[in-house]
Length: 295
Image (cartoon, rainbow, N blue to C red):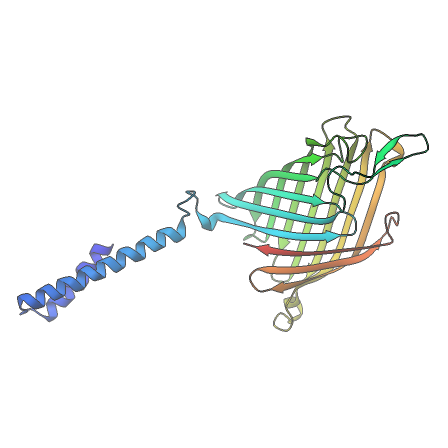
């Protein structure tokens, strides 16, 4: 390519100066060589932009995000998700979900119940989830369906006393994430089953939510306020199985309420949801805030 462009430039210059001296001819050749060097530099930059030479992957095929999240049940959480396009409309996905309750790891606080049994107060062994999956995209990327399988680490599922006998790989987490997003409507579905696989296999949980919202563009307000969407958030946690005490099975919380999400510069979004806990055991209200950076 660069030789063809240089040849055309050289031919054009030659046509306008047929009777050139040796000095002029040398200057002309220097200009052509300088042009060739610039073309080679541009080609090199283009290749570096298309490929990450340090890893050998196409950087344009990567996507993902980092979410900082907090609510009145799980506390502070950090979620990292990423994907790499492996075929048309199919991504290989991987994620990490770092659950950090107010009491980290094994608690040093011990209580004694009426039977004289010692129990650790709080602490779930730095509950840590990691998983992989595939993301299937449809309808010009407006719909995505992402099944995953995760591995859980900690002591929430596997130990008789939460915060004791902390284990790696204490459970598996088959889960599904479905997103729909166009110019006017957005929706998100999450369903995960936390299945205990080690120790006494004490507990299983089902965690799920649905958010549905509309965008300001639906009403012609997309240039008025920096709002991504407003809508309804419903979230549910169910103690599906308790092999230590079956009386503890059932709904843990059942949240429903409005949410609003603001768009910020640099691919940032700030979201807040709040409302009522229909179950009303943990608290009569719920609140949840998150900030996400997409890359």
